[in-house]
Length: 284
Image (cartoon, rainbow, N blue to C red; front, side, top):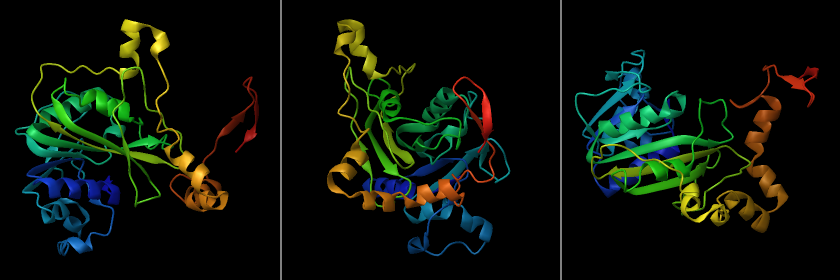
């Protein structure tokens, strides 16, 4: 688990708005980008590989971590998939790609909320699309907006989608409206970046996808397609860019899948090819 450039830029933006205060990372996060511009790394190579020094360099007061195992010497040990408490709360809670690995995700979200002080912020960096198998789950902006709603005690919730092979661009995803939902189809793998502020405690959470709420009172005919994020990348590519540009932009993913040179490649993995009726006709 690590904080990559996308995650760090989001955290850096938050630090510029107001101090991070005391920080909790979900998993002891490594530094997965060149952080040399933020000061010298610790002399101890073990300490240098983890994010604590980088977060302190941009203003964090203290940095603690939580993991299910003590193999990386996390501050707190516990299973996010089961109800748990910590001895204290934190001003900034950072999930830089951990919740997709937890089976009981709803409990994990509730735990993160309980770890966050009133007025504190929660950051998520999670897989959205074309990362099946990276973890148990992939997530959507509809979930983040439904969970971190005003009704549930949150405000200033923002969600962005970013290409995992394009470090220079995010797309802001607007909150869904009643009777609509946000869907995404993409050529490349896409990640979600979000931040929200815990404004008050609530007794229980209500999380319902807004797509259906309007239909319950007005009938199914009011359900419509969102002016969707589904085409945000593809439409721009189709309208403004050539096929050659598209191919070049996705060359890394295509090469990785074709030749097994990236973490997503299929070389060495055995799959059974089946006919539609279920008969086997070879391996790939």
